[in-house]
Length: 223
Image (tube, rainbow, N blue to C red; front, side, top):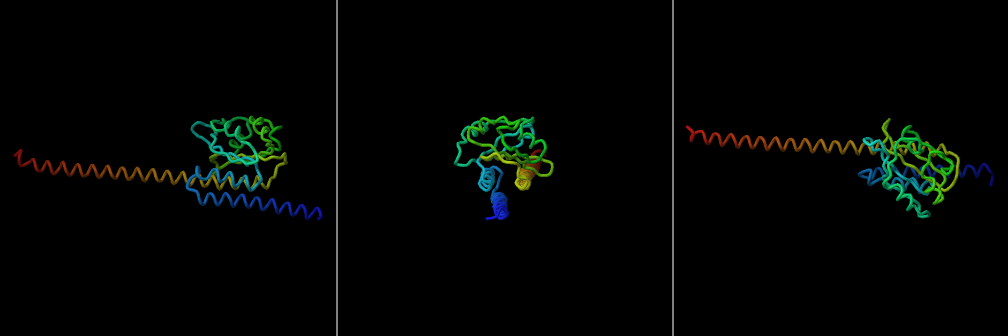
C-alpha cells in the first residue's frame, strides 16, 4: 500500500468519525426535551465517535461569574472516579486556566499534552488515568457563552484543525438548543403568569358581582 493511499484512508476514517460525532449530537438534540436530559448523551456521542477517553460539560453561571460542573462521560477503559469527585462541587472562576480561556475568548482551544501545558490545574488527576491530549470548545449562540465542553484523549498529539472546526460547529448547535429551551421556558412562565392574572381578574369580577347583588338585596331593607 502506497503512502498516498494510506494517508487517504486515514483521512477518510477521520472524516467519517467527524460525521458520526455531528450526527450523534444532532440526533440527541432532536430527541431531547432539555439540556439536562441531553448532556450525557452529547458527551458520549462526541467521545465515542472521536475515540476520546473522557469529556465534561461546564455550564456558565452568569450571576456568580463561574463555570459549574454539570456532567461527565468517560470510557470504560479508565477509572474516572477521581475526576468525578474532583469536579462535582468545583466552580471555575475566570483566570488563566485553559478552560477559562475558552470561556473568555469564545473560541476552541487545543493542548498537545496537558501534562506539559501551563495553566492546567488538574494535571495530576489527568496523568493518574493516562490522559494527555486535550481540547475544549464553547457552547454558544452569537456572543453569549452558555458553557464549555472539554475533551480528553490518551495520546499526545498536535492540533487537529478539522476537529476544532467541527466541534466549534457542534458548540453552536448545542448553544442554539439551550437558547431555544430557555426561550420556551420563559414563554411558559409568561403564559402561566397571564393565566394566573386572568384567573385573579375573574375572581375579582365574580366577587364584585356578588357584592353588587348583596348591595341590591339590602337596599330595600335599609329603605
